Length: 375
Image 1 (cartoon, rainbow, N blue to C red):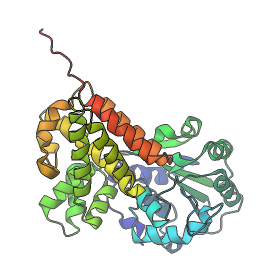
Image 2 (image 1 turned 135 degrees about the horizontal axis):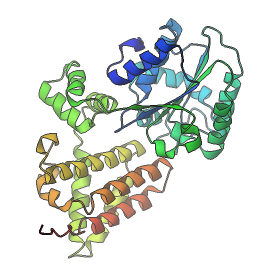
Image 3 (image 1 turned 45 degrees about the vertical axis):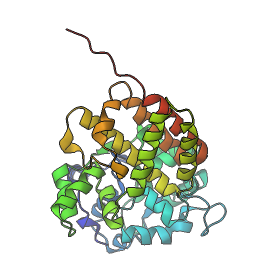
Image 4 (image 1 turned 45 degrees about the horizontal axis):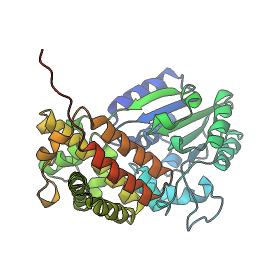
C-alpha cells in the first residue's frame, strides 16, 4: 500500500511536512481527530514520510514501527491478548482499508460485543519494543491508535515513559476523545488537531470513486467532514433505513408519553430491540441520532442547505420535529447521546443504557422554549 497517496488531510500534511523539514520532530505527538474523523490515515502518511517511504512500511513490516490498538478477548485469542497476537489481522485490515475506523477494527477482530481497551500488558509490550535499538531507521516509532482507550494502569505506565523517553523514540498517540486521555499525558505531547474535511473537498474525494455528484453531496453532508465515515458509507451503500425507523419510533413514542403513560412500555420494548443489534450497529445508531438532532437544530435556525435529508422513514419530517429542538434542550440532547456513546464503549449493559436514553428523551422533548422578551 502506497501510503503517500492517502486522500485528504491537506492541512495536517502541510504541518507535518514542516515538522519533518525542520528536523525537530518531538518525541511525543498527539493527533486529535474531530467530528468522527480518523487520525489513522494521517498517521500512516506521516510515518511513511518519516521513513522516506520505506517499502517495508508499505507492507506494515518495518522493524522500527510498533502499533498499539484497543483489543479484548476474541475467538483468535481467548485470554490475556496482546497487540502482537492481532498484528497479522490488523495488518490485513489496514492494508485493505487505510481509512479503517475503530468500529470496523472491532468488527474485524470479533471484539465488537466487548469493551476494547489498551491494558497494562500492552504498555509493557511498548517498553520492550522501545528498549531495542533501531534497525533500519534512526528512531523507534510507536503508534498508539485509540489512545483514549488506555486503562488507568496502562496510562500511568506510558506517562513515565513519555516523561523520560528512551533515546531515539517517537510516540504518536491518536485520539478521538481527548477529554478521556490522562491530562498529564496530553500536556507532554505536541498537539495537532485533525480538522474535518471542507465540504467541497470531501465531495471531490467521494465523487472520484465513481459516485454521482448528487450522491457524493448527500454522503458528504451525512459524514460531517469525516472522510473515513464517508468511505464507510460508500462501501456499505448504507441507506440507514433501519436507523431511521428506530429514530422515528423513539421520538414519536417519547411524544406520546405525556398524554399516554402506556407508551413507556413501547419505549422499553424499543430499547430491548435496539440492544439486540450488534455493538457496531448500536454505535452507528447513536451517531445517526446525533446527526438528526443536529439537522433539526439547523432547520430550526434556517440552515436548510446543510441538511442532507429532511424526510425519514414513515413520513417523519425533520421540519416538524425541528421546533422541539431549541436552545433549551439541544445541548442536553447531544450530551446524553455523547454519554451513551462513552458508556457503550465501556461495555455498559445495553438494555439499561437504551432504556435510560428512551426515558430521557420523554423529558427533553417536552422541555419548553425560553420565553422571548421584548427589547
